[in-house]
Length: 358
Image 1 (tube, rainbow, N blue to C red):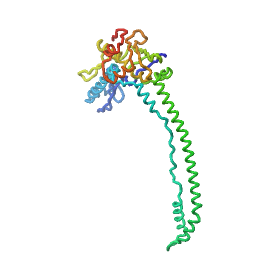
Image 2: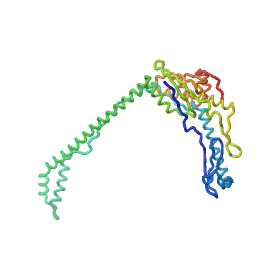
Image 3: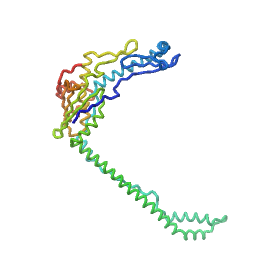
Image 4: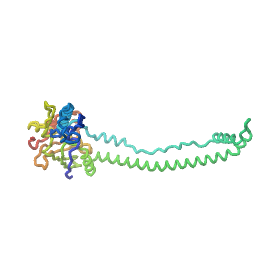
């Protein structure tokens, strides 16, 4: 289907850390580089005549220690992200859940809003005319009931007809607007219904064009602490998604670690050969679990995912493993944290293609 490059997530990058404090000669800023180098700036200058004064200030070592601990935590987290790709995976959707969703899918219909204005009544019009007549025939002493009654009777039918006509025009206009809204909204509901129905059916049946598009979408969700190149083939008939992944041999998390010194500073050193080998093995064996959890969600028609991990350029192969969908889902539900090396070698019968060394 073509090779795709997936860049490492920026959130896994270790950048410089810095913090500032005030002292007698202004503002001092301590900057700790990812390689363990400490730099001190006074009022924005690294060559200030007050650098030594800032270094003697009590806040200096406090700031250094705080930055050192944060840098160590960053390196520890980087190693954790690199070696725990397999943790806390979510089970993929099941065919049954998709079928249930499809069965419950209902085409929504727009409900017209009622006209909120009540039709004018004779009682209300009569009361309004009586009030109007009292203003016209007002007397300080008593009221001219005969004139009021005559005024009401002379104007009642005309006023009632006029008000009902106006009300009817407004009601008809409201109904016309509602009819237009219903037509537009029902068309939108229908499109949404067809789109949802077609997507669920595609997720159940797994046509090649759909799977290809969804795999590419899933690639955008992949977040790893290193770059990868990914290629895949899909067989609808065999219900198999075959994935080949190439990873770089030079991954920072493989080689470096941080430790705190008695001075309060941090030391960035190379990992031992044993540490590099153990961490790399956890990464290599954890990566297939991470990728399978992503791509099983593409379509319920994918009953098996085969994954091969290569060194970049396919100079050397690391492992091959094939996950059956049902067994993978059951496993993920029962295991939130686990040792991937054991399970791939003993449960999934994965094959080591070459010696995995640091």
